[in-house]
Length: 243
Image (tube, rainbow, N blue to C red; front, side):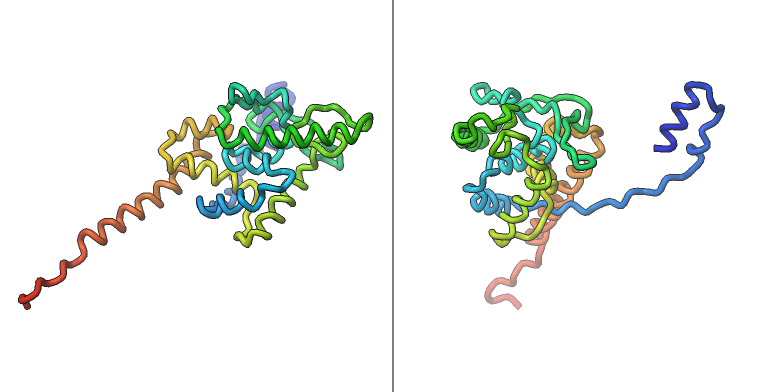
């Protein structure tokens, strides 16, 4: 932040040199990726089917949406008939206030909706219409997909809390909601989707972020291939009658 501020000051010719560029920045610790396996993911989806945020969990797992992007979705961003979802904003909390912000990559992205997302979204819309009729004049009418009983956006932290509660009830190993996003990237990569396409779906700002996941999956694939070699090249058992 200091280096960026001093660079702007240099451009305005208020100083002649940005001394912050001389400092060697520390390297950020790399967090090991540990998303759920396919079986664990399916177990979670089965356990969360009756949760009010089930549709949000499906979008997080199948499309890799960030928590703020999930909360920031509006019905005007979703075309169920043509199966397209537009990610154009996110909802964040800062200093106790919820506010709308640009996406992390500072650009919108249109993503095809998987067929498995359609039924949960339609069911969620039906439940929301029922909540609207109950709320009456108290409904805020903001158009958010995932809203409170009065139509206001859901608290982002509550999405994570519900995710943790359901996963614990299902007896699954604990992971972050954001790890479901990594799980989406892992499944797409394992299915042979090109890294550039995965990058566009997840909204990564740099291809290097996608390649971290890609390398992780490739290593697992290599390990599986080598295990085949172990079976192929293990010593042949002696035939009967031979010493």
